[in-house]
Amino acid sequence: MSASTPESSILPTYNRFPVAFERGEGAWLTTTEGTRFLDFGAGIAVAAVGHCHPHIVAALTEQGSKLWHVSNLYHIPQAERLAKRLTDASFADYVFFTNSGAEAMEGAIKTARKYHAANGAPERVELITFDGAFHGRTLATIAAGGNDAYISGFAAPVEGFHRKVPFGDIAAVKAAIGPKTAGILVEPIQGEGGVRVASKVFFQELRVLCDANGILLVMDEVQSGIGRTGKFFAHEHFGITPDIMGIAKGIGGGFPLGAFLTTREAGKGMVAGTHGTTYGGNPLATAVGNAVLDIVLADGFMDEVQQKALKLWQRLAELQDKYPRIISGVRGEGLMLGLCIASGATNADVTLAAREQQMLVIPAGDNVVRLLPPLTIGDEDIQEAFTRLDKACQAVDAKLDAGAKS
Ligand SMILES: *Cc1c(COP(=O)(O)O)cnc(C)c1O
Image (tube, rainbow, N blue to C red; front, side, top):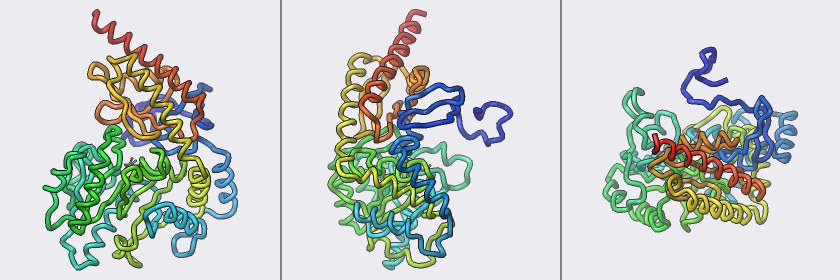
């Protein structure tokens, strides 16, 4: 069951919790032993409309009995429709479908570089990236990210990244721009890095810097997109648009699906033959993606997400008041929230204590516990989360007392 059990044949790259789930419904998961867990991780922000939402189950089963895959040698109406809906609802003119977030970011990076090559400036290959950034686990995306441990032992990192610029520091970004700069690659809110936010002004200034220097703004909305922050895309909070953007996670609602989106101008280098994928955008994946959008793009859905987020935030602030030795802050946007754990405790302690209350949360960088419930979460489940987190904090608090006495 867990990767640590000696008989597992799965390459042991993950530290898994010793639990396996059999069923999911909304924000609830049931283990193989029949125990129910409240899921505030949503498979790392993937189950945007909850587990096994009847509408996406219907889309999956209907398409699943018709046609799954044909390859991109042919037209795919489901993909055409999904691309049209994504471009209608965003800054973008074009969409390229992938199967994952890292692939989406690889394509976004290639598109940014090819833009400059098409403009006769092939020396402009470098993307400025940030400390705490996460863009995936392929060779290029680890080279773009802020985590040295992910790079170590995998040969010289892919060239063309100016890494670990302080997130939110516009002067440092300015100083990093040079004759080889192709663009700036940034998450609107850093997910894996610990739900780290930067100011609206910072992002507006990034946009100005890009325009002034003829470079591209590339956003990684793999985690923050598809309604997660209470807007369809998180950059909408800043009143700016990127030139290129990667998405994944929420768009498939649990089916592997990603995409990168681009303006016509930024995508002009990506002509026939420059990029490809066998599976990306297949009829089954894009039928599910369309069903997810039926729910997320429905009138009033984003308002509901914002209202739920407000309720959750209020409850979390109560917990912070009640347990100042454990929670030092709450941050994030919409239903992408982080509990900053005070220095006397760890995010692992709180994650474990929550699990003992049959509640799933996800640790992230910066000693943060991430809360990423399904966007369709109900008020009762928010209340239930509060009750369980309260008990978890109480248990961690009691341990701190026990530790102080011994
Ligand atoms: C999850 C994530 C990725 C990578 O997505 P995979 O599907 O795991 O390849 C990239 N960027 C961000 C911001 C993510 O949260």
